[in-house]
Length: 319
Image (tube, rainbow, N blue to C red):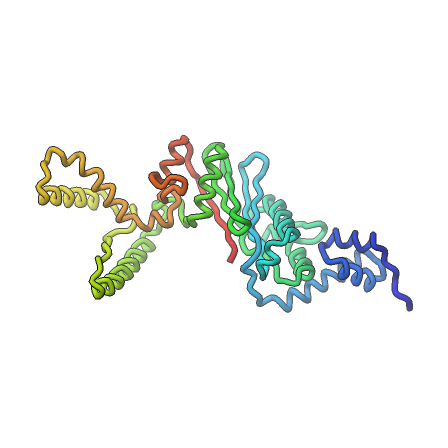
């Protein structure tokens, strides 16, 4: 039986529909006897076989993609994972990630998104199909959605995506704060969101690390690190602050500073006390972090200077 003749136009049509290589498309059409739909099934079955073989592979490379609706009130951030940086930078792969984001914005969960339609098949099936095309494991490694009166966004070299919700529209502030989220990796909006048990556990762990470091520093005759009693504003109760002020006044008195100038010195000492004892907030709380474009102010102060509030944020990244 002679081989079915396949035209270049038929091969190109299948290539555009699936993203598969020219030779793979020709082989699929030949195997399907020239039947276009059957050829698509051939390629999908190939994808399933490849997916099964590569199921235990690590898909820590890939691309982050974001989609914002026309009203700038809803945003979604996803990560399309693959195995190698080479594939993750490919233009076709980046285009696929963008297509997935376009679909993802219409769904509220990753599960809904994976079951959504993608040209007659589900997103999950499309991932399997493209696994066969690319030859690497593909999967959705992250899915985050955010709704707010205004949603700002930022994508850092296709590796990190950030969404920020604001109380009103401001493109500059939205992008600035999203860049902050992307670069500084906050995990919480404010210290007020921390669980007290987490703060207590983190305090104990950090003190233990510093005390261990000080043993070595002492052995070397170097200056010891300050061991903080607190690490979050959540711990700085009115009683704690009152005691800190009393200690500062006692220190000034011991230094022989005239009492009439204490009011000029105390604010700086109290500001330093708060800074030294809120390291957890500065690292993990978006609003309490130093603003990356001006480290003399916090993100909260920067946003407030524009008469705006941050309602929420989301961050996705490779790995």
